[in-house]
Image 1 (cartoon, rainbow, N blue to C red):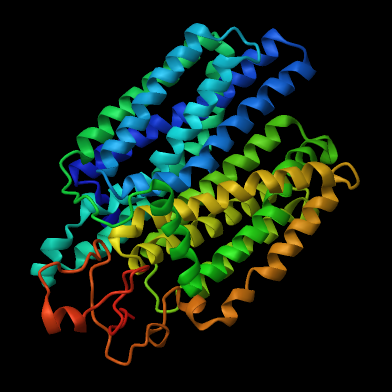
Image 2 (image 1 turned 45 degrees about the vertical axis):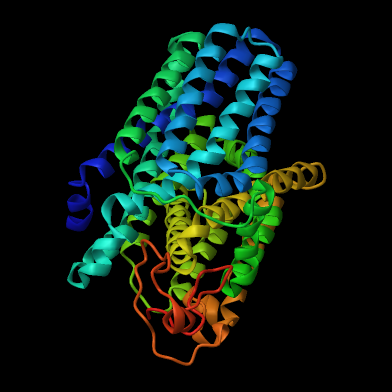
Length: 468
């Protein structure tokens, strides 16, 4: 814990975290505002149509643009991009509060699209900003004795995720309470203020970062963005992990998200508040998991990451395992810990494996797989509930995650979340490199440049190894 407290002494990193806490409250407020205003101004059927349409357009923009956001983030300072995204949401929520009359119209659809598009930029941008606020790759390269800062760069990802997850514990309750006490217009202005504060904090935190524009032959944003997908496919361990994750999201996690609220509310007459407590328990677990994941230092990281993710299968079966409220909250907390440990280890491994010139695109592609698959999974869940009880859907989801979660560990690279030297034709000893900035030395030339050539997709040395 002392390491995390020391990291908060980095003033700009602390400023970024403060801005994110406030910004996430705005994120939570937006769906609550839509729900509250729709229910007040329409009947249940119309309200359901309004809410589902707003969410559909939001996630459509998020899933559709997050892939292209990576190409943009590799060309500009990601702090400027994230601050700009928050500034646009600041304007959009003002429009929602002043122009929306509660009906299903262009104002709501436009704001939902804007919010989703801005999330597509800000989410991967934050994962690029945080490590560079606590570690300077050039100073590490010139002063190897300061290697502890390299660990701080990895810990920064975990700490930022923990800060963001912590708001998920009380955020929904606070947002719901606010929308019940004030009008939707006032709540929208509060959300707008949250995004405005975050825009200023993010700009202050990261505008002074040195960030070189990537010079490439690719001029098409589409081709540039698709290179992130190539990174996913050509990095063997990442390819297997992503295939497993997509299958689980489509066939287990998506249906679980649709069926779990119904099962939680209907089982033994549990009230709606119980569902909120379970979500709070899961959010608390993600906060803990982010902190734990940032401290894990083992060679076989996949042997920790994938079993941690598989714990979600037990969470999906929780309502079958017990009816005790405290036990259910603990099982959901355990699932949150496991999924977040997996996410942090995977993100840090991507940061290690991928050249900084492609890192924004790689992280955006990682987000794309999750957000593109989730609506399909939710649709499958909705169809399944027409033929099966919610409890049956949850059982299938739990057993599917448990049955498939460890299969990728049959691959050696997946067990380490690292590409084996043999996969890049390497026979030499490992060469330490910074996990913050893996850009090659542009001053290298002649025989030295040939000896240290890098893979054009991943940026990994063709003749070098990896830190064990």
